[in-house]
Length: 195
Image (cartoon, rainbow, N blue to C red; front, side, top):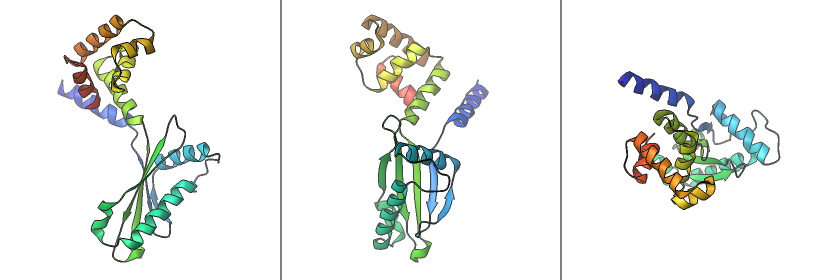
């Protein structure tokens, strides 16, 4: 049993797409980036009418870096990095991307760094629902109900969205509770959000 849980956790970890990471010098020279960063930058460029060009920072990312550099010029104490974070939401409204920039100051300004994480918003919740589907063996309809429960919808709202009766929604929730070994809607959400 424990082996199955471990294998399942590894399978989930393999499928999970984390944020992209980018590190820049104070002169905006690229020090580090990963493949995920460039995938998401390609989407940002496309959503802003440009082409996805490899190796070129999207203008919004360059602007974020410049804003962080201005802050780094004022805040030079190493503990100051905890006091600020600059965020931007970009990209396609249906699949927005969050840029989160941090300045990592050093006493010698030339050694300061800019760290930017690039993350697809909404993917985490989608990933949790996918994991719940797999772990609890939920049907497609049960997954749809869970997605609406995560939005805080009532049984009536879920029934209208799925074009079924409220009684059918109640039955789906009852089955979901049995599969997740919970007794309340909140319990179901706790089980899903824990993944």
